[in-house]
Length: 165
Image 1: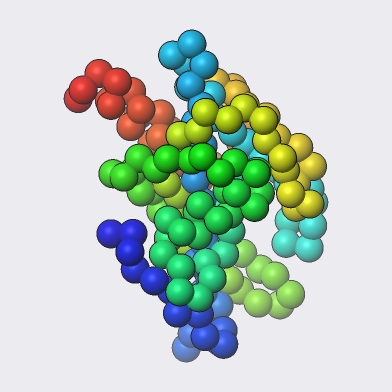
Image 2: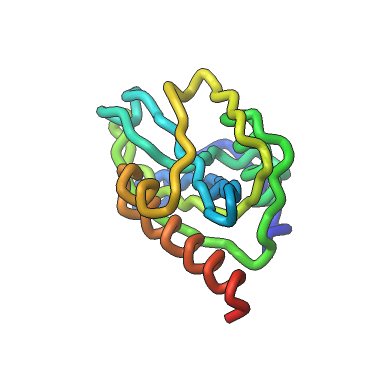
């Protein structure tokens, strides 16, 4: 499932003129007195985003990487967390399109659920902040509906794993 490697060649638009991108990331959870806390990153406004936003760690796949390898690398680069452990049966894709420099881009992002024991985060230059929040607060803080859907799926997975359903 997660062993498919990406072979990144020179990027070209498809026949319909749409550019395709694939990324991977993770919902990071840390337990505190049996309560899950989720890590959100604060992204500044930039060329691709007109305003600042809160989202989950993610990034582009590099040549030869599997989806999980990308997620692990991106989490470590963006947060400094190196002890993450993936929940093997959680894989949640999202898809969206956007315009960037006159190009229409169709993006797929594969999210995994990963646990950590580390509380301290060292954000990369790509971010302006981070926060650990319990589920309801994290759901409210996330900027995009597709990220909220991924978080809901992760919360459901954790709840079902706890109750054995």
